[in-house]
Image (cartoon, rainbow, N blue to C red; front, side, top):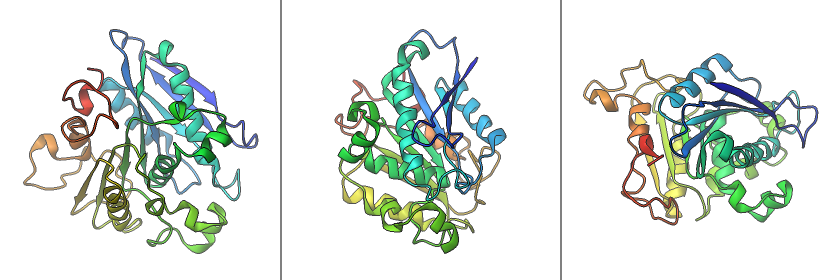
Length: 282
Protein backbone atom coordinates (compact mmCIF):
# COMPACT_ATOMS: atom_id res chain seq x y z
CA UNK A 1 0.00 0.00 0.00
CA UNK A 2 1.20 3.48 -0.88
CA UNK A 3 0.41 6.44 1.36
CA UNK A 4 0.49 9.68 -0.63
CA UNK A 5 0.13 13.09 1.03
CA UNK A 6 -0.99 16.04 -1.09
CA UNK A 7 -0.97 19.55 0.48
CA UNK A 8 -4.26 21.41 0.07
CA UNK A 9 -3.26 24.74 1.58
CA UNK A 10 -3.07 26.77 -1.62
CA UNK A 11 -5.93 29.02 -0.52
CA UNK A 12 -4.82 29.22 3.14
CA UNK A 13 -1.03 28.82 3.42
CA UNK A 14 -1.25 28.88 7.23
CA UNK A 15 -3.35 25.72 7.17
CA UNK A 16 -2.04 22.16 7.36
CA UNK A 17 -4.85 20.87 5.16
CA UNK A 18 -3.90 17.83 3.11
CA UNK A 19 -5.27 14.79 1.34
CA UNK A 20 -3.86 11.51 2.68
CA UNK A 21 -4.41 8.81 0.06
CA UNK A 22 -4.12 5.08 0.71
CA UNK A 23 -3.53 3.53 -2.68
CA UNK A 24 -3.59 -0.24 -3.03
CA UNK A 25 -1.32 -1.11 -5.99
CA UNK A 26 -2.97 -4.54 -6.25
CA UNK A 27 -6.24 -2.96 -7.44
CA UNK A 28 -5.15 -2.87 -11.06
CA UNK A 29 -7.56 -5.20 -12.84
CA UNK A 30 -10.26 -2.59 -13.27
CA UNK A 31 -10.98 1.03 -12.63
CA UNK A 32 -11.93 1.23 -8.96
CA UNK A 33 -14.27 3.45 -6.98
CA UNK A 34 -12.64 6.08 -4.80
CA UNK A 35 -13.84 7.23 -1.39
CA UNK A 36 -12.73 10.48 0.22
CA UNK A 37 -13.39 10.31 3.96
CA UNK A 38 -14.03 13.59 5.80
CA UNK A 39 -13.82 12.84 9.56
CA UNK A 40 -15.41 14.72 12.42
CA UNK A 41 -13.75 16.52 15.32
CA UNK A 42 -15.72 19.76 15.86
CA UNK A 43 -13.43 21.55 13.38
CA UNK A 44 -10.71 21.57 16.06
CA UNK A 45 -9.01 18.21 15.46
CA UNK A 46 -9.25 14.84 13.73
CA UNK A 47 -8.77 11.46 15.38
CA UNK A 48 -6.38 10.02 12.81
CA UNK A 49 -6.18 6.61 14.47
CA UNK A 50 -9.93 6.11 14.16
CA UNK A 51 -10.01 7.74 10.72
CA UNK A 52 -7.36 5.40 9.40
CA UNK A 53 -9.33 2.39 10.66
CA UNK A 54 -12.30 3.61 8.64
CA UNK A 55 -10.12 4.20 5.59
CA UNK A 56 -8.52 0.77 5.76
CA UNK A 57 -11.94 -0.88 6.13
CA UNK A 58 -13.04 0.60 2.83
CA UNK A 59 -9.69 -0.16 1.24
CA UNK A 60 -10.33 -3.82 2.10
CA UNK A 61 -13.66 -3.58 0.24
CA UNK A 62 -11.94 -2.57 -3.00
CA UNK A 63 -12.00 1.23 -2.77
CA UNK A 64 -9.03 3.51 -3.23
CA UNK A 65 -9.43 5.66 -0.11
CA UNK A 66 -8.25 9.08 1.04
CA UNK A 67 -8.68 11.02 4.27
CA UNK A 68 -9.27 14.76 3.99
CA UNK A 69 -7.53 16.72 6.72
CA UNK A 70 -9.35 20.03 6.31
CA UNK A 71 -8.52 23.35 7.97
CA UNK A 72 -9.29 23.82 11.67
CA UNK A 73 -10.60 26.90 13.49
CA UNK A 74 -7.19 27.62 15.01
CA UNK A 75 -5.80 27.99 11.47
CA UNK A 76 -8.54 29.95 9.70
CA UNK A 77 -11.29 32.19 11.13
CA UNK A 78 -13.99 32.38 10.18
CA UNK A 79 -13.45 28.81 9.06
CA UNK A 80 -15.81 28.72 6.10
CA UNK A 81 -15.52 28.41 3.15
CA UNK A 82 -12.03 26.85 3.59
CA UNK A 83 -13.20 23.23 4.14
CA UNK A 84 -15.41 23.43 1.05
CA UNK A 85 -12.56 24.64 -1.14
CA UNK A 86 -10.31 21.91 0.27
CA UNK A 87 -12.94 19.28 -0.48
CA UNK A 88 -13.07 20.56 -4.05
CA UNK A 89 -9.28 20.27 -4.29
CA UNK A 90 -9.47 16.74 -2.84
CA UNK A 91 -11.94 15.56 -5.48
CA UNK A 92 -9.99 17.25 -8.27
CA UNK A 93 -6.72 15.71 -7.03
CA UNK A 94 -8.28 12.24 -7.00
CA UNK A 95 -9.62 12.66 -10.52
CA UNK A 96 -6.34 14.10 -11.78
CA UNK A 97 -4.54 11.01 -10.46
CA UNK A 98 -7.17 8.59 -11.70
CA UNK A 99 -4.85 6.77 -14.10
CA UNK A 100 -2.00 6.31 -11.58
CA UNK A 101 -4.35 5.31 -8.77
CA UNK A 102 -6.54 3.07 -10.98
CA UNK A 103 -9.63 5.08 -10.16
CA UNK A 104 -12.73 5.62 -12.27
CA UNK A 105 -13.24 9.40 -12.47
CA UNK A 106 -16.99 8.82 -12.49
CA UNK A 107 -16.95 6.94 -9.17
CA UNK A 108 -15.36 9.38 -6.72
CA UNK A 109 -17.50 9.57 -3.58
CA UNK A 110 -17.45 11.63 -0.40
CA UNK A 111 -18.15 10.30 3.10
CA UNK A 112 -18.40 12.56 6.13
CA UNK A 113 -19.07 11.84 9.82
CA UNK A 114 -20.26 14.47 12.32
CA UNK A 115 -18.85 17.85 11.22
CA UNK A 116 -17.26 15.99 8.34
CA UNK A 117 -20.85 15.33 7.28
CA UNK A 118 -21.45 19.06 7.55
CA UNK A 119 -18.62 19.67 5.08
CA UNK A 120 -19.84 16.97 2.71
CA UNK A 121 -23.50 18.04 2.81
CA UNK A 122 -22.64 21.66 2.12
CA UNK A 123 -20.23 20.63 -0.62
CA UNK A 124 -22.91 18.48 -2.23
CA UNK A 125 -25.11 21.57 -2.39
CA UNK A 126 -22.40 23.65 -4.03
CA UNK A 127 -20.34 21.47 -6.37
CA UNK A 128 -22.28 22.59 -9.45
CA UNK A 129 -22.40 26.27 -8.49
CA UNK A 130 -20.77 29.06 -10.46
CA UNK A 131 -19.34 30.32 -7.17
CA UNK A 132 -17.32 27.17 -6.47
CA UNK A 133 -16.09 26.90 -10.03
CA UNK A 134 -14.93 30.52 -9.90
CA UNK A 135 -13.22 30.04 -6.52
CA UNK A 136 -11.37 26.88 -7.58
CA UNK A 137 -10.89 27.48 -11.32
CA UNK A 138 -12.18 23.95 -11.83
CA UNK A 139 -15.02 22.67 -14.00
CA UNK A 140 -18.23 21.14 -12.67
CA UNK A 141 -17.03 17.79 -14.00
CA UNK A 142 -13.84 18.09 -11.93
CA UNK A 143 -15.87 18.97 -8.82
CA UNK A 144 -18.74 16.49 -9.10
CA UNK A 145 -19.03 13.67 -6.52
CA UNK A 146 -20.66 10.44 -7.65
CA UNK A 147 -22.44 10.06 -4.31
CA UNK A 148 -22.22 11.21 -0.72
CA UNK A 149 -22.43 9.30 2.58
CA UNK A 150 -23.27 11.01 5.87
CA UNK A 151 -22.88 9.45 9.32
CA UNK A 152 -24.50 11.21 12.33
CA UNK A 153 -24.00 14.49 10.45
CA UNK A 154 -24.12 18.08 11.59
CA UNK A 155 -26.35 19.68 8.97
CA UNK A 156 -27.45 23.02 10.34
CA UNK A 157 -26.28 25.27 13.19
CA UNK A 158 -29.94 25.73 14.10
CA UNK A 159 -30.54 22.20 15.44
CA UNK A 160 -28.68 22.56 18.73
CA UNK A 161 -25.01 22.24 17.73
CA UNK A 162 -22.72 24.15 18.04
CA UNK A 163 -23.06 26.82 20.70
CA UNK A 164 -22.92 30.47 19.67
CA UNK A 165 -19.25 31.18 20.58
CA UNK A 166 -18.19 28.14 18.54
CA UNK A 167 -20.45 29.08 15.64
CA UNK A 168 -18.81 32.51 15.51
CA UNK A 169 -15.52 30.73 14.78
CA UNK A 170 -17.12 28.81 11.93
CA UNK A 171 -18.83 31.60 10.00
CA UNK A 172 -20.07 35.18 9.94
CA UNK A 173 -23.28 34.03 8.25
CA UNK A 174 -24.85 30.89 9.80
CA UNK A 175 -27.58 30.76 7.15
CA UNK A 176 -24.95 30.04 4.50
CA UNK A 177 -23.83 26.80 6.18
CA UNK A 178 -27.31 25.45 6.96
CA UNK A 179 -27.05 22.60 4.46
CA UNK A 180 -30.74 21.71 4.53
CA UNK A 181 -31.55 25.20 3.20
CA UNK A 182 -29.41 25.03 0.05
CA UNK A 183 -30.14 21.68 -1.57
CA UNK A 184 -30.58 21.72 -5.35
CA UNK A 185 -31.62 19.22 -7.96
CA UNK A 186 -27.94 18.75 -8.80
CA UNK A 187 -27.10 17.12 -5.45
CA UNK A 188 -25.52 13.69 -5.75
CA UNK A 189 -27.32 10.59 -4.37
CA UNK A 190 -26.95 10.49 -0.60
CA UNK A 191 -26.95 7.77 2.08
CA UNK A 192 -27.54 9.03 5.64
CA UNK A 193 -27.52 7.31 9.03
CA UNK A 194 -27.82 8.56 12.60
CA UNK A 195 -29.07 7.48 16.03
CA UNK A 196 -32.11 8.92 17.76
CA UNK A 197 -30.46 9.18 21.19
CA UNK A 198 -27.33 10.99 20.01
CA UNK A 199 -26.77 13.50 22.83
CA UNK A 200 -24.35 15.75 20.94
CA UNK A 201 -25.79 16.11 17.44
CA UNK A 202 -29.54 15.64 17.21
CA UNK A 203 -30.79 13.17 14.59
CA UNK A 204 -33.08 16.01 13.50
CA UNK A 205 -30.08 17.17 11.46
CA UNK A 206 -30.18 13.98 9.39
CA UNK A 207 -33.96 14.14 9.03
CA UNK A 208 -33.92 17.79 7.93
CA UNK A 209 -31.38 17.07 5.20
CA UNK A 210 -33.18 13.94 4.07
CA UNK A 211 -36.44 15.88 3.70
CA UNK A 212 -34.68 18.65 1.79
CA UNK A 213 -33.18 16.11 -0.62
CA UNK A 214 -36.57 14.46 -1.03
CA UNK A 215 -38.17 17.82 -1.79
CA UNK A 216 -35.71 18.26 -4.66
CA UNK A 217 -36.18 14.67 -5.85
CA UNK A 218 -32.56 13.77 -5.09
CA UNK A 219 -32.09 10.00 -4.65
CA UNK A 220 -31.49 9.45 -0.95
CA UNK A 221 -31.77 6.88 1.81
CA UNK A 222 -32.00 7.53 5.57
CA UNK A 223 -31.49 5.05 8.41
CA UNK A 224 -32.22 6.05 12.01
CA UNK A 225 -31.15 3.66 14.75
CA UNK A 226 -32.72 3.66 18.20
CA UNK A 227 -29.48 3.64 20.17
CA UNK A 228 -25.90 4.72 19.65
CA UNK A 229 -23.54 7.33 20.99
CA UNK A 230 -22.07 10.08 18.86
CA UNK A 231 -18.78 9.29 17.14
CA UNK A 232 -19.33 5.59 16.49
CA UNK A 233 -17.51 5.65 13.14
CA UNK A 234 -18.70 2.49 11.34
CA UNK A 235 -20.34 1.06 14.48
CA UNK A 236 -19.09 -2.39 13.52
CA UNK A 237 -19.05 -3.61 17.15
CA UNK A 238 -22.40 -2.19 18.17
CA UNK A 239 -25.62 -4.21 18.26
CA UNK A 240 -28.04 -1.58 17.02
CA UNK A 241 -31.15 -3.76 16.89
CA UNK A 242 -31.37 -7.38 18.01
CA UNK A 243 -33.90 -8.18 15.31
CA UNK A 244 -31.74 -6.98 12.43
CA UNK A 245 -29.94 -9.65 10.48
CA UNK A 246 -26.19 -9.84 10.92
CA UNK A 247 -25.37 -8.45 7.50
CA UNK A 248 -27.50 -5.36 8.15
CA UNK A 249 -26.67 -4.95 11.84
CA UNK A 250 -24.49 -1.89 11.30
CA UNK A 251 -24.30 1.07 8.94
CA UNK A 252 -21.38 -0.50 7.09
CA UNK A 253 -23.57 -3.51 6.31
CA UNK A 254 -26.29 -1.29 4.92
CA UNK A 255 -23.81 0.88 3.13
CA UNK A 256 -22.18 -1.87 1.12
CA UNK A 257 -25.63 -3.06 0.10
CA UNK A 258 -26.90 0.36 -0.87
CA UNK A 259 -28.40 -0.22 -4.32
CA UNK A 260 -27.83 2.73 -6.62
CA UNK A 261 -29.21 1.65 -9.95
CA UNK A 262 -32.34 -0.03 -8.61
CA UNK A 263 -33.84 3.33 -7.69
CA UNK A 264 -31.51 6.07 -8.96
CA UNK A 265 -31.84 7.76 -12.31
CA UNK A 266 -28.93 7.29 -14.72
CA UNK A 267 -28.51 11.05 -14.80
CA UNK A 268 -27.24 10.76 -11.24
CA UNK A 269 -25.26 7.57 -11.45
CA UNK A 270 -24.61 6.39 -15.03
CA UNK A 271 -23.94 2.69 -14.61
CA UNK A 272 -25.12 0.12 -17.12
CA UNK A 273 -26.57 -2.46 -14.76
CA UNK A 274 -28.01 -2.90 -11.28
CA UNK A 275 -25.12 -2.89 -8.83
CA UNK A 276 -24.52 -2.07 -5.19
CA UNK A 277 -21.90 0.00 -3.43
CA UNK A 278 -19.71 -3.00 -2.77
CA UNK A 279 -19.40 -3.72 -6.49
CA UNK A 280 -19.05 -0.19 -7.82
CA UNK A 281 -16.14 -1.28 -9.97
CA UNK A 282 -18.47 -3.45 -12.05
